[in-house]
Length: 77
Image (cartoon, rainbow, N blue to C red):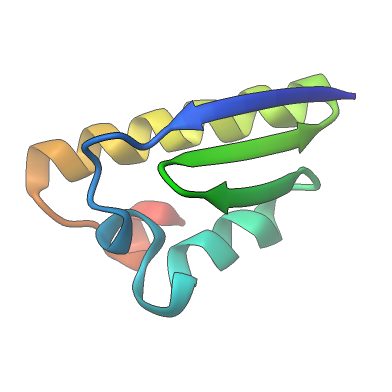
């Protein structure tokens, strides 16, 4: 099992995670990894391949959010 901590410092968490964590729930449904948000970090644990995919997804979503100023459910899907 692998664990990864992803920093959300300087990231608008409401936009990233969605209203009522809508985006977070979509991500959780798509992967087998356990995803926990604590403060300005996301903790991901699970098999190495899945954790790496979740990390890549969050990196891409943060990039899109910084570029566009917002995310919608289609960006997350």
